[in-house]
Image 1: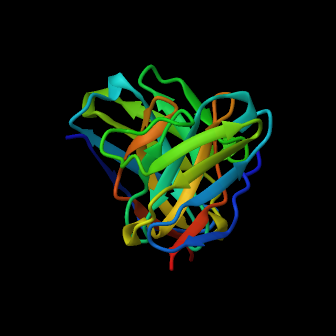
Image 2: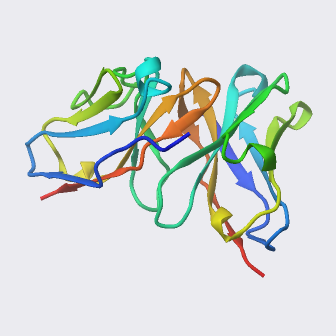
Length: 116
Length: 109
């Protein structure tokens, strides 16, 4: 049974950096592409970016300059960094497994609030 | 990259059918047969219902079906049931990225 678990600070200061990690169990990080998706309160889903175990990444053009997604194959996990955050980055952040050209396995999600 | 356009809401009585549209452009929905649909109950994790326009993952009831014509994809829920009340999002691949729809709240009357 494949499971994804997000972890990281729930509160980030404005202009700071949001950092999250996704631990993968039941599957190898080397077997798929992996993505981050977020949902601001009361709003819809937004794709942030994706990662291949080789290190290749793609990001949402609207966030591209602020997003870094990386992999730690030894720990079977991948991470998200989002710089220069504002209140607009307050959201539930999900890590997900890409499957075909969709997302079949989702983490439980972690709420991140940007506030001083 | 703009969000795909979905109606804000849709509704139907138990047993009826409801269809949700998802309109994009030739750069996303119209350019690829890679539209997916997600069901999201508030407070829960989104669930994949349809992938590659019209394919259902194992375990998804055949009451859920997907289609596409030009730049518009559609999700149809037949034989509406109370547990189908949720938010639904479409998503399309778009040249090394993905774009979600604005979301539709389905209400079972």
